[in-house]
Length: 337
Image (cartoon, rainbow, N blue to C red; front, side, top):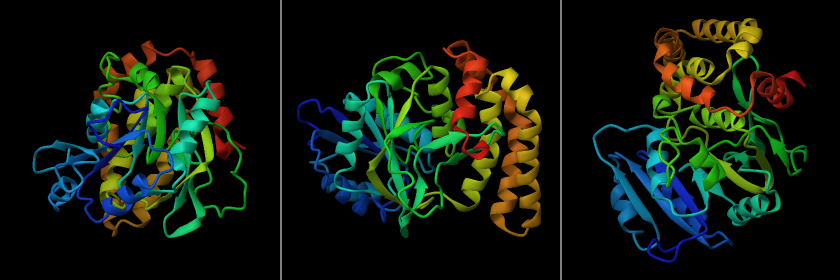
């Protein structure tokens, strides 16, 4: 766990922005892991709440990456900065508002060792204040252009206790083989991985984008039910901030990652979903989050051409054609089952 020790097998990257009230519980849970061959990298994204002073007290057991400035650079940029510094063969993203069980890291590593076909591993995320209810047992992307978390809000009745393939992991607590992230890196795929998450997305849906790009390249994910994590939803972001970026980035994902035949075939579904979100926001127009959602949707519709250069790179590098990718989307689309 000492950042100056021999090269660890696993690197755990924790991006944080003004999370001084969240980090102690997260770090304590991480350092109580039964699996020990890992390093901890915390990326302080221009925090102004004393986060850096807190982290200085842990300097013997973690590496701190400081992103300067007076305004946050966004989750994607912070995660990229941590992944760039990571030395492990297995790279793990962990939110600062997540609290893993003691066996969590070992279970993720073990699942990747058992399942050589999987390049990524998804945790069993439970709601922090309702630990008997799911937040995510793997994420998916609907044919209507709307991502979601498998099992979200459901009570745990044992329905997701099987190790199995899912579309992709929620990056709040996910493990990736280094080779996969190098393959997916936006800027040439150099070692170490650089620009793995797309900074254009800033925050929210950046892991959905990563999952879509991974699937287009043929990479697969194993869900690990024994890798349990309690997660405070949107404890760092949330509210109008989340609503704006989700509204904008859902449009960006369609424009950036979906092959044209899939867009054309599912355009009525996509339009219907966007209209539903707009009408829902209009019904609650007095609420700041609803107004932010509408602003985000408008920004996405007006500025989506800015992701076209990324789209060209994503689709040019795809190993799956549109028919193959469409079958993958249908296979894991929970809403169609």
